[in-house]
Image (tube, rainbow, N blue to C red; front, side, top):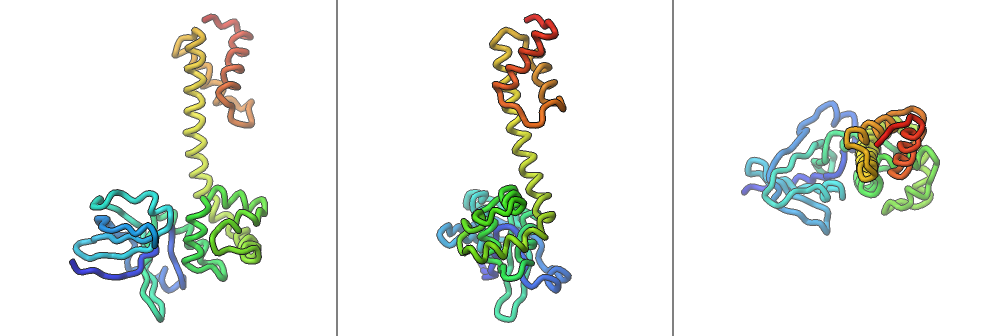
Length: 236
């Protein structure tokens, strides 16, 4: 099999020397069989139509990688420099855009951008930027206090670019958590003698109520449901 050794920094987004590359895209996505994983060096190789593409990847890509021989699709961005031609790969288009946000910051190259993406999820980073928590950035390998302070200043102007992905991830997580909490509360009410449909309606009304500014725990939902039932004279 003929192997093309294009450096594919897979992680979340790419870009280095922005405008020319973005205006003249060459490869935007790759789909192929995963034929090699080098976790120690954070790299992968894809067989795409008989051509082996070597990729340097982030922790996110490695964590989601399938078994050897299984198909893998990555969003990519091709970069041409004086000393190299680089093909960066990403878990999805949203990761690629997030990476592009980082590499646009003065002094942030692809390696550091990948390190940030591998170390901090968008939600955590957005909250840290909003609260000016410089210490969060110093946890990223290769980022000292001075670099973290400079990044914090730069990221504040990029916050709106970070938030959409962060809010989407957090919204999905919160939704799944509240669904599980609601189900636990319904099960508790059924155990107390309420009918399943009755318990579902009691909990659903509470979770959809604008009375609560914060999501309720299972215990809070059950207690509130019982109080409401007592006030309304709802029988078991």
